[in-house]
Image (cartoon, rainbow, N blue to C red; front, side, top):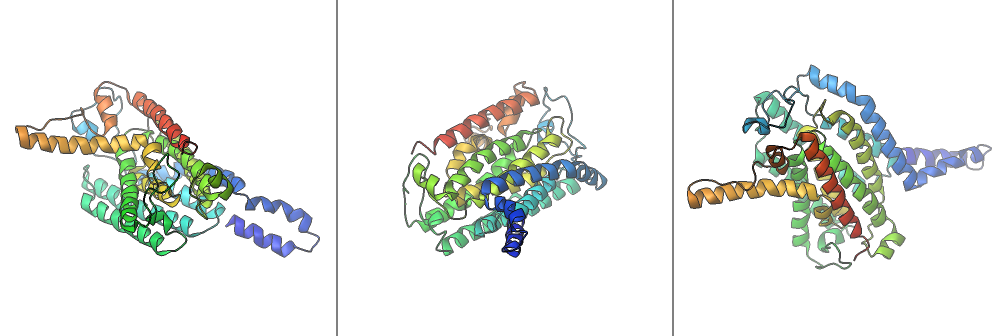
Length: 382
C-alpha cells in the first residue's frame, strides 16, 4: 500500500513546486527500505497488540486447561511450571502482524498473494484445531485426516496454479536440489506437484510438532526466516542470482518483504512466548507459519533447501514418525511396542533425560543456527 501511495503522490507532484519535496518518496521503490519498514512495523504491531490479544484470549477463556502431552505421559521432572491455564491461539497475533505489515509494505504480485492466502487458510485451520482442543478439553483437537485434507487441497491448488501460469511453470516442472546449479529433472510436472505438496504439508506439520516448549518454535522460525530473507532477495535479483547460479524468479524479491514481516512478528511474539510463556501460538500460528515457510521455499525454486535451513523442524517431525512406526512394527513382531526415544517429539526426549526446558530451547536454537549456515553455504557451493 505504501509503495502505491508514494508513487501516486509523486505522480501528482510532478512538474509542480512540490516535486523537490516529494523526491524522498523514491525510497519506497527500494526493497531494502521496505524490508526494514515491514520488519519494524510487524515488531511494533506485535508488541503493542500483544497485551490486548492476551487479555482478549483470557476473557474468552481460550486457555490450555487440559494436561499437555508431556505431563500426560508421566510428567517431566525438569519442568518447574505447569502450562495449564496459559492462553493459546496466540498465532492470531503473529498472523495479524505479518499480514498487516506485508500488505502495507510489499508490491502485490501472484507470489505475495499466494503466500498471504496460504497464511490465512492455514491459520483458520489451526484456529479450528485449537478451538476443538479447548472445547473438548483434551489434546486431540481436530481429526488428523481433516487437517491433512485441508492442507493437501491448499497445496494441490498452489501447485496446479503455479503449473498453469507460464511464468511460474518451471517452479513445478524443473526439480532443483541443494548444491547443484542445474535442474536434475525437467518437464517433471507430476514429480514437481508431489514435491510442492510434500514441502508445504510437511513444513506446516513439522513446525506444529516443534511447538511444544516456550519459545522453541517461534525462535527457530525467526532463524529460518532470516535464511529465507536472504534467499528470496537473491532469487528476486537477476544479477545476484546469475552470479550465484541460483534460479531467478521474477517477483520473488517481494517475498523478502514478507520474510521481514515474519521476522518482526516472530520477535514481537517471542517477547510474550519466552519462558515462562504468557501465551502459546497454538496450531493457529504453527500451521500457518510452517506452511508459509514451505511455500516460500517452493516459490524461490528451492523446496529441498528447507530440509537444510529447517533441520530442527525436520528432526522433530522425523522423531515422531520414527517413534510411531517403530512402535507399531515392534508390537507386531515381538508383541510389545518398543521406543526409539524416551518421548517424541524430540524436545520431550531431552526433557525426559533431565534437561531443563530453557536448556532444550537454547541448544535447539544453536542447532538451528548451524542448519541456517549450511543452507546459506548452498548459495555459493553449487
